[in-house]
Length: 392
Image (cartoon, rainbow, N blue to C red; front, top):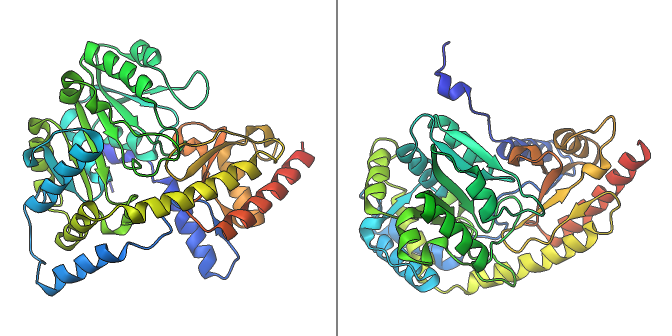
């Protein structure tokens, strides 16, 4: 069968593949601990579930406008105003089937073959594949130190073909959060060179000890160049409900909505009502989740720093730790894929190889799991590290 060339260029998601393997092993009765999860381990808040039940009871089960129900779009506008000092109208909002669809829509309507997209390493796995599907070119920027890139690095990477900068703060997989001053410098470069910014802010509410800034909020020029992507999945533990949204110039949003017209139409009507309850309700449930995540993060970092051969930076957001394990590589385990494969095989612990995010020195560990699992999983990691060190 002759598949389209564009689909032959892309790779399956390694995060979803490893999660599927972990789930299969659990069903087989193996004592598997997973650090692979890209979703909260908390339940969806009760008031959100109640809103969905009410929507079903009232028969809110028909098509909606592709771009979303007006009440939800107005609530999203109010959220942007309150949280980010961004002023949008409903015509600037598109509600999609998860933030992933919002990102996909935007790249499809903005990128022509050969257009360049700047992506920092490490990056969320789907950015690269989405750009490939649009027949664009990924230009990867690796941090000179730490896990952040600078405005100077971005400027040096810009060519006549550069169209978009993908910005992700807080970051998946590293958890880094860009400071206000860093974002202001990046904004200056993008305005100077007329570069569109797709700002993925899905982990906005999960920040520890820092303040989130949206790059679009600094001035009118960068506001007009930025599309902000967010959603309900991480903040309200609603991953399976599939509600994401984006906000930006109405011409871009209208084009993305037209694309969605012919792909999925509207996001799930019931899930839209549930997301409305989440966005307009109290943030207390988010604060409780964030407080627990911070405790787990602190424990995980503390333990990791005691394991010889491992290097790690403190993440300021999201629920991931990006761990440099290259100091443990030997003739048998010489990359992140073999590290994760052997770790799962020998010690029944699932984690994601850094090669999926563009840096083979690292693995990603999620602390969106219980403290009990974290303690046991890290004890197994320490034993694995000892085995690798002994085999050098």
